Image 1 (cartoon, rainbow, N blue to C red):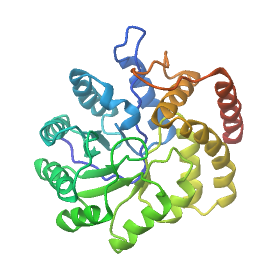
Image 2 (image 1 turned 30 degrees about the horizontal axis):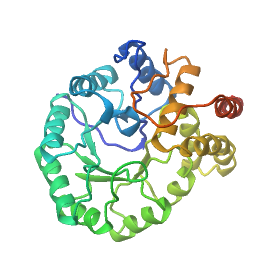
Image 3 (image 1 turned 90 degrees about the vertical axis):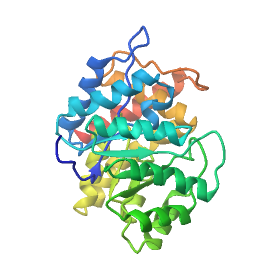
Length: 304
């Protein structure tokens, strides 16, 4: 078992490619991961756009083991372990640790609104069951309920900033980031996951890293590196077409992100198909696709 790595920088969420017969395309998965690290990703992991809640148990288990195996030490890997019951989530957490992932990430159950104590108990169980860091994800911009600030601060106070990290996605993201930062006296390690559209604002509020989809990874890395060296002109030059593409994704929520992201991964030659797991409520229409393609081509010209 390797020494587990820290989690700073650009950590893209892995998309799950499917073959025409609706099985996981492991060749495309490997191609995606190799491209991500060749492009400059600092690590990677699974999350909502991995369609993690739409996989069978066996597929989710396979992905949990296969990604660290393919990455093979090139960067830290985190596994999404959130589930509809504490028992399920604990089982996935144990599986992730056994598969040599470097960290866990979890959303709360989505089927009901939980009390503050219920949320605390759920995340406490996950924090205690393995030795891995736990990224507490508030994905309420897409699914489930928001997690109150008091719960987040309480978890950090209980376990410390090396054990408990955060990925808040509830709106308004910027003020929420600042509230969490200030309530923890700057000790909270916070990741943003807005698809890039709020990256610059989030960076200025002191985030530890970003967790974008894979589709615009080269652009996100360029923006991140420009911000790190104070090159605002370059950061904004690359940032604007990313914002325009992300705005198109956001119009249909999680399904919009999935449809456009997988379309672009096919366009890049990384995936053979743009198949998503049904049911979903939005299909990428031809006019939106054309606008996405125009913006993507513009981004590639800017990146050179």
